[in-house]
Each structure stands twice: as C-alpha cells, then as structure tokens.
Image (cartoon, rainbow, N blue to C red; front, side, top):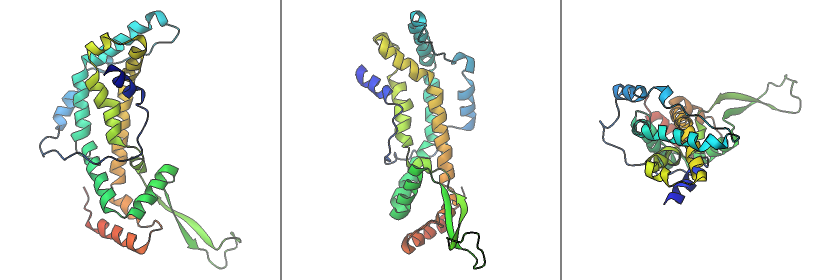
Length: 250
C-alpha cells in the first residue's frame, strides 16, 4: 500500500538496536568484479544525479522541483540498485558482515558480548587497566593504583546499529517501491517525503559504507587481542583466547 511506503520512508532515521540473523551466503562467483564496479560508478556522471532542495519560501516552484529530483533518481534507479547489490555482495560487504556478526553472537562468550554492547552504547571504547603504583610514588596519595589506557577498540557501532535493517529501510525497500505510477498518485505531502529521501540517497549509501568499514575494524585480530585485556572471567577469557588462536589474517 502507498501509505505503508510513506510510513517506511518517514522512519528511515530509526535504527534498530537488535541484530537480525544473517542471510544465507551466496555461492562464490556472484561477487561483482572491480571492473564491473568501476563501470557502475562511472556510468552516471555526478552532475546528472545532483539533486537540489527547495526553500520553504519557494512554495510555488517547490512541487515542480521535488518532481525533478524524484525523476532524476527514477531515471537512474537501475544504477542505484546495482550499487546496492555491490554493497551487499562485495568482499567484506554487508553479507560478509551479517555472517561474521552471527558467528560472533553465537560462538563468543556471552559475558564478552554483553560488555562490548555496554561499551558501544556508552561510547567508551578505551581499554583501561589498573596497575599498582610504586610504593615511593606519592603523586596519587589517595589511590594505590594507576589507570593505564592500553588501547581503543574499533567498530563497536556495528553492535548497536543493525546494518541489515538499515540497508533494507534506507535503500532497498524505497528503491523497489519508487515508480512513476506511485509518484503520480502521491499527495503534495507524500511527494515531499519522497523528495527528501531522494535528496539523501547518497548519504544513506555513505552511511552504509562507513558501517562496513567499522565492521572490518571490529573483526580484526588486533581488536580481538585487545579484548583479552577486558575484565572477563577465567572461562570467558579462555574461550576468547581459544577463538583468537584459530583466527587467520584475511
């Protein structure tokens, strides 16, 4: 229904805090090659898909301007769908991230996952360890230890932002719904909502690119080795070390 598509667009900024199970992995060979990607990204000059937002004071021309923006995206809909497919299927793309998150959530210690999620929500990625200070050091008379920062975890945002749902809500579902027939029946308010989405389509793509980069940083051997310094129980730390010892550089 058209009303459902509008509600979906109006909720694009809402990010889910839970994590969905991964999609079934595609067969090797379905990944878009770098050569194909280059063609996709250069097939439409930037100036052709540049969009403009109208001032609220220009009410007489705003509807016409909005239709122009929407029609530009409609004209290059296939281009955007191909870019979306590349985001999902490329090496270390969205499907890779889904699989890794699923493995992490099912195989790593629950104590570690809970601690990392709290760090992500509180935006406190620093690994801080307490070390006893020398007896003759009086610089911190009221404290018997130093707090040392041993490093900073990366990519924690992937634990609080559901990239799979973000891709579906921000790009895939709206792109599939957007048709000339739909826009022809939209009210002025609905047209304005679609116009806003079209103007922000590149920012949605950039946001997903940033999250994929965060995912690569999170699933790095360096990051996992830093996790060993977190305050974990002996059993959780032993499980973590066992998993780390099986990791191989990508």
